[in-house]
Length: 325
Image (tube, rainbow, N blue to C red; front, top):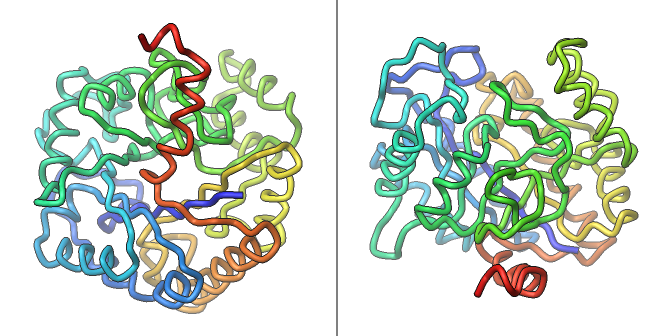
C-alpha cells in the first residue's frame, strides 16, 4: 500500500467563518517543527501545500524551505481564491465558488500563487484548491498552467457553491476535464483525500438526493459526513475509526491512502479541532501511531504527491491510447 501526507500550510483566521481578502498572520507555520519525530523517525516525506498569504512572508517561506530540506518534502500550491491577487470585488460573499468566477480570473490567481512559490529549483507541480472547491473550470485552469498532480477532490463531500464530490473515486485517477469526479483523459493525476462510502451504493443515493431541492443540501452534507462515510483521517476521527477506514479501503482493493490536515491544527486554539495544547499533543500522537500501524501492517510506503505521478501515468496511457495520440 502507498500513502501520502498532505498539509495545507495556511494563514490564521480561516475557521472563524470569515474569508477576508486582507493580510493575515501565519505564525502557526512555526509549529510544524512538532512533526519532526514523526517524519524523521518513520521516514515520512510530506507534501506542504502552501497558500499565498503564507508564501508572501519571507521569513515564513524560508522556514518552509528549511523543513523541505530536512524532511525531503515537497512544496506545492494551495489556492485560497478569496485572498490571492488579483482581488476583484464581487456581490457574492467570499469565498466565491470557483465555478462562479471567470476562467481568466482563476488563472490569474493561480499564476500569482505559482509565481511566488517558484525559485531556482522550479515551480510547484502539485496543487490543492481552497475548501476543496474544484470544479471543471478550475481543473481546466490547472491543465493550462501545467500542474501535474491535484489533491482537491474530497469523496463523499459537497463543497460550498456546488463542487459535488460525493461520487468521486477514492484512489488516484486521471479525471474527465468536464467532470473531475469521473475518470477521463486529463493529464492531471487526481489524488483524492481518503474518505470512503460506508456502502458502495450510498454515494449514488446521496448524489441523486443532492440534485433535488428537498432535502436541503445541509442535510445531505450532514448525512454524507456523519452517517454515510468513514474517513481515514486522524485529524478528524479517533484512531480505531481511521484504521477501520484503511481496512475498508484495502478490502475494496484500494492502493493509496491520502492523509490531510491543516498547519493550524498544530497550534492550540487556531483550529476548532484542537482548542488546547492537550488536543494538539493527542493529535500528533494519534497521527504517529496511525502511520506506524500502516507501515507495520501493510508495509505502506510514503510518497509525495508528485512522486505518485510516474507510478500512475502508465495507467492513463494504457487506458486511453487513441485519445493521447
